[in-house]
Amino acid sequence: MRVALAQVSSSADLEANLALIARTSAQAARQGAELVVFPEAMMRSFGNPLHPVAEGLDGPWAARVREIAAEHGVTVVAGMFTPADGERVRNTLLVTGPDVEASYDKVHLFDAFGFAESDSVAPGSSPVVVKIAGATIGLATCYDVRFPGLFTELARQGAQAVVICASWGAGDGKVEQWQLLTSARALDSTSFVVAVDQALPADADPGSTAPTGVGHSAVVSPWGTVVDELGAEPGLLVVDLDLAEVDRARAAIPVLANARW
Image 1 (cartoon, rainbow, N blue to C red):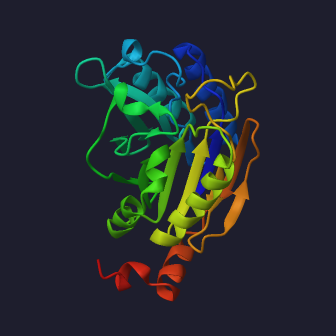
Image 2 (image 1 turned 30 degrees about the vertical axis):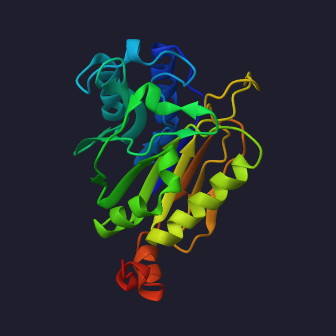
């Protein structure tokens, strides 16, 4: 399976973000990608009001992403915001492409490092696994990566790879934590991890607590080794996943079968 990791920086402008998805999806399709993964908060970047732009999965923003995926014959995963209770939204991953239409609402909200995502976002409640190009893919969003139980549950539901869409918060040691956590979750689940973060913004505000991305998107093997990785700047990383490697890893390190609780 050929996947494209689209490490980009979204903005407050919904139309500009859609144009960015269209350009990058076209580039990924030219390189033979079947799955194009964008970061969390592609609809609108954090640090901007979310409730005014939230819309259902049948709304115009999601419809345009579907058109882009159909035009290029790829499956797109991209972060958007859907309505929830009161003034809150849900932090949603839209998955759309040939023979697949699904979504995942972020379960673990980022109430950490001085940022309170739960003030404006309502949590989801269920893990989600989808079939894409014959592969079984689990979905996770940013802060989810700190919770190994989600990843082992996705693996038990058949996930051969877990896509993590993120807008990781900057700070001392945060890049190192991102790298460690993505490798650890691959080992926990003996699955590939496809971790796509927002690029480090060129105009990042050092005084803001909003998580706007640090880059370092990566593919990690089921053995916990980094297959390939980007730096902090925007980029497109295209990687072939040998899904038979998952079976080999699970035979050699049967942590899912050996777990006692």
